[in-house]
Length: 385
Image (cartoon, rainbow, N blue to C red; front, top):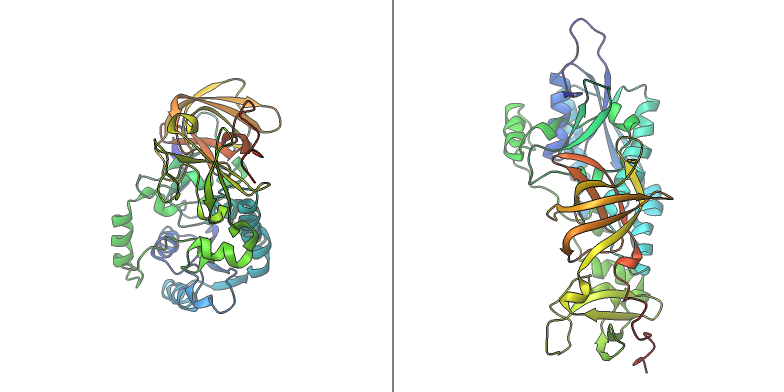
C-alpha cells in the first residue's frame, strides 16, 4: 500500500489544499504539515449554529476558537476564510438530532455532520476553489492500492483517537481528494509537532461534547427544543406489565440499567423507547442481547457491496470494541449483521461500521427493529391505564 499523504513531487507546481481549521491542536498541526510538505494551503473555518446567548460556549467555533485559527493561519502564512454555515447546520444536523430522538432513536450527529457538512458542503466548496484536496484533523488514514489504484480508509495509528467510525461514508471520490495528516501520528506526537511548529495550541485541551450543546446536558437541550419527548409515561416490561412511570424518554438510553426507578427480582435494562405510546420498555439481560441486527443507509468504501456474505469485525458504537460477525448485503442499501456472540447495547440510530483488521470497509445506521419487542410479546396497551 501507498499513502496519499506524501509530500509534493519535486519541481512540480504546488497542489492546492483547503484545510478545515477549528482553532484546535489537531487541525492546526494538519495545516502546518501541509505547509511543510509544500502544498498551497488555504485555511477555512465554519461558523456553526449555537443557541442564542451561548455562542461563547460552542466548542467548535467560539470567538476565541476563531481567533486562534486566524492566528495560526497568520503564523503559517496562509490565507484564512470563515464560512457561515449556521442556518444550514441548524436545518440539517440539529434538526436531525431532534427528529431522531423524537422517533425513539439515539443518533450519532457526528456521522451526519461528516456526511452533510464536512464532506458534502465543505468538500464541494473546497473543490469550487480549484483545490486538489480537503484536509482535516481527523485521526484516520487514506491508503491507495499499488495493484488497482483503489483507495482504502484505514484507522488512525492512535487507536485511542481513531475516528474512522464516523468517516465510514466516504467514497472513492472523497478519498482521492481527502487528506488526514494527523492520522499518521499519536496524539502525544501531534502535541509534540505543535510545539515544534511553535503553535500556541500545543497544550490546548480536546473538545469532547457535541458542539451545539454548548457544554449543556443533552437532556436539557432536548427539553428546550422538543419538550414532548420529556413528558412522563409508563414503564412497561416486555410482556406488557407496567412497573412504574418514566421521567421522559429523552432521559434514558438503550441498555441502561441504573436509575430506572423500578424494583424487580432481577436486573432490568432499557430495551426499547416507544415514542408512539410514550412508553419505556424494559427487559432482562437475555432479552436485550442480539445475535442479528440490520442496518440501513449502507456505504461501502470500495464503491460497491460484496457479492455475498463477508466476515468482518463490527463496531456498534464509536468507542465500542469490534465484534466478530458475518455481514450480508441486502437490497436497498441494507445489510444483515450476524454476530458470533450476542451483543448488548445495539441501538437504533447508531452506526454499525465494518472492519477488516485496521481497514474500514464501510457501514450504515442500525435499524429500528433492533430494539423493538418481538411480535409474540403481549401488546403494549396492557397496563397503560
